[in-house]
Image (tube, rainbow, N blue to C red; front, side, top):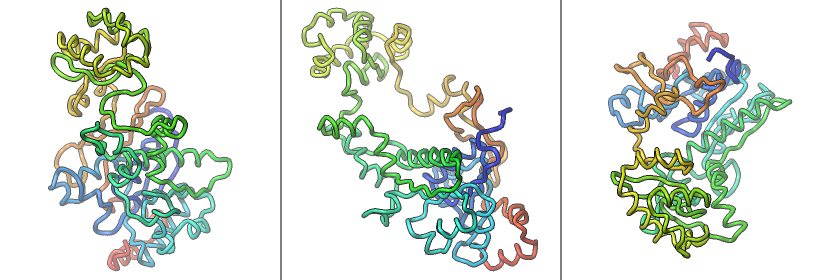
Length: 399
């Protein structure tokens, strides 16, 4: 981007592992922040050992790490050691934000919790991400994405009556937790008076995104159910069968229903009393779906999608991931970045940027995911450490 990025000049300390925290800091890095990843010596972020390529896992550059750490710097510090804690304290003095996703209480026990670090830098924005929040009955429970999905009610309404409860096919709890943290941090950076303690619960973050389902229960006393690909707010709205595969159609307005029926050659459905109103169509959705499926068998999904969208009826093919990533709608929007040289990796590495464009340009970073401790010497020297001090700390396992 030619223009100055929104978080230019902001220093973020990323003390996080695996997904929710690193994904949060991934957003901040692309928004222009300098993100310094503070990792455990020798092993680093657990994500370095995770992913579908065993060889990359062996060298500490697992796919799970590569996916969300481009643009960051890496330094190591053993926070159980005196020297490692001092490194963190010096970093905090120069930082604007610290993000951690340790279990609640761990940072305090190490002597580097919010209260201790606030004394060093009163303007510090400290963000703690955990599965269930820093207080409450479950605060001390370990949390992984699937555990949070199950606890949140998401799995209970995913799938249909035969398959629910069903896990969402990607780590939605981690991802939503990370996005929620990035949003809160960005807001705190804009506060008139800097300095805050942000408590992010992955569970609460995920439930907060379920507004319609939750409100139907809280306000209308309607218990959410698992309904597969059907949209319970309207009909016909869901996934249908075409000649060559599934097709999503959302004829949510009466006028869209009329256009759909006419275009698929079933204008007769418009005169059927059981489909006369939205509520009646919802009540009789199964029979209506069968009628529409039969008509859609005449043409491929892509043809129907093109025709219906031109007529003002939202419709779309159901792609798998490789197909949509290779589609011009994604290829033409600079969502994917490719790094030709990544430490220890003998091939180019392609990773996702963010879903944000500012003034028509995709947010991007210039450096690939770092090797463990790759930037340690430069960062430590900038903090005032001499070469012999750095060497001694390495020998002691403090960095």
